[in-house]
Length: 296
View (cartoon, rainbow, N blue to C red):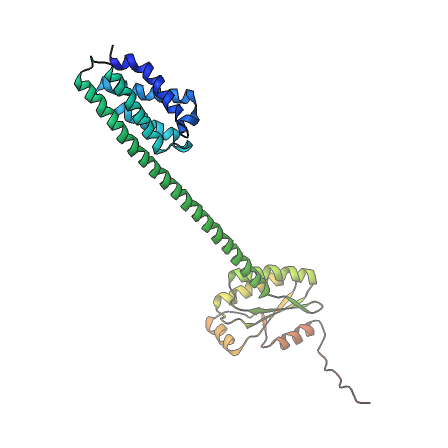
């Protein structure tokens, strides 16, 4: 029988007792059963490597110990205590076995030395991996936080733009059955859709027969804007309501002619006053001048 196989039970028990005896170490906190398991794996690894002439089992045992217990507080001091205690016990066992040859003794000493190096290297590598993972997780959390902030800012901006669009398309009742809608700013497809939806609802609510659309506040009147207004006018007519386009300046009139846009089906006037007068005329009403009050 090989000397390590003969001494293995006693070495395991002695190593487990010494590991558990050290106050403040993780082995002391683990308890006797866990210390016995750790000691058994280390002695078994030594026996396996001595039989095979390698140090593979010792490396695997040390790596497994680090991976299993590093998260529970295993420190380098615990690994050093394990390696030095194991070395002292094994060398004492060899001293009591004169039949072991010098080459075998040197092999054991080399294995114990490698165990110390492997423990230090694997521990440092494991800690570095943990630090990298923690840094990556922190970076992910920071990115997630930034994304949440960007999303909140985007939502706030979208809400603000929607508020601005709502505010820039006011629909005002100027007389029973007559609505006025002044446009201010750029007139695009998104705004046209919002305007049409709100205008149709306002016509239904007010039972309006005439809508005055003032485009004097639109800085750029192009083919797209003209087509969008024609579509809005078509939707308004489906409700039996007439739309009057006012604020058509000479520059806008030239632009419309130059673009070849046909507004023949839409009543156009130059000013809001003219539009209101025409709307009242459609309802067989008119704007009468106020009589001057005489002095008594």
